[in-house]
Structure formats: C-alpha cells, structure tokens
Image (cartoon, rainbow, N blue to C red; front, side, top):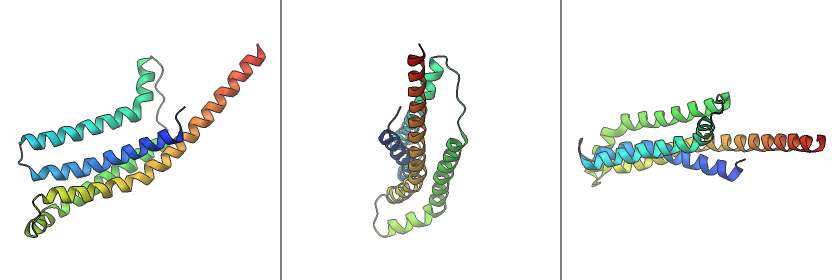
Length: 163
C-alpha cells in the first residue's frame, strides 16, 4: 500500500514532467535544427516522459511480469490522463501561437535565448495547471489503497479466526 505522501510525490513529479514537456520543447528552438544541443534536450525530454510513465505504471508492469491479469484502468484514472494530456497540449498550442512574435520581441529587448525564457514560463504554467488534477487523483488513490488494505486485513483476520 502506497502512502498519501508517495502518491502526492508522484503527482508533483508528473506535474514537473508536464511542465518539462512544454518548456524543453520550446527551449530547444534556441538551438539550430539538427544540433547536438537540440538532440540532447529532446533526449532529456524523452527520458523524463518514459521515467514518468514507468513510475506511474510500475505496479501494473510488476503484475504483468509476474503473469497476473491486467486490471483495466478505471474511469477516474482515464479522466485524469485525458485532462492532463489536454492541459499539456493546450499549453503547447498557446506557446506555438505566441512563439514567433514573442521571441522577436524578447530578442529586440536583449534576450539572448528568448525561447528558453518562453519555455520556462510556459513550462511552469503548464505544470502548475496539471498539478491540481494530479493532486486530487493522488488523494483518491491513497484512499483506494487504504480501503484495499482494510479489506485485505479483514480477510486475513477471517482466515486466521476461521482456521
């Protein structure tokens, strides 16, 4: 059973990854198209998304490796996944629309890396927008874990007293 703190740490980490997706994608535009720097940023981006997915789905992966049946995701989990994806996509779309004019304006005002500045702001905003969704789901997961643990304890008690 994972604690509420564990679920909340996972929510914060997921929110950071969401912000990183938006921010790093924008910041990479400061580098030439096929440069090593841009490839490194995209590698960091891909690694963070994969790490987040592995961390979130680790219990299901362990169950599958042990040959246990896969529990289908519940509707609340799918709702959170859709909201999280839409929020990240929305911030990415906003950044795409304002990127050119805002980067030119920042360059005129002396910014050496305007896309990095835009990426930091958009990434922070994107991450902060997904945090409440993930935070609420963390509380639901912890409550579900607690209820499952209580049920397991009751079944164990019944089995030991019935023997």
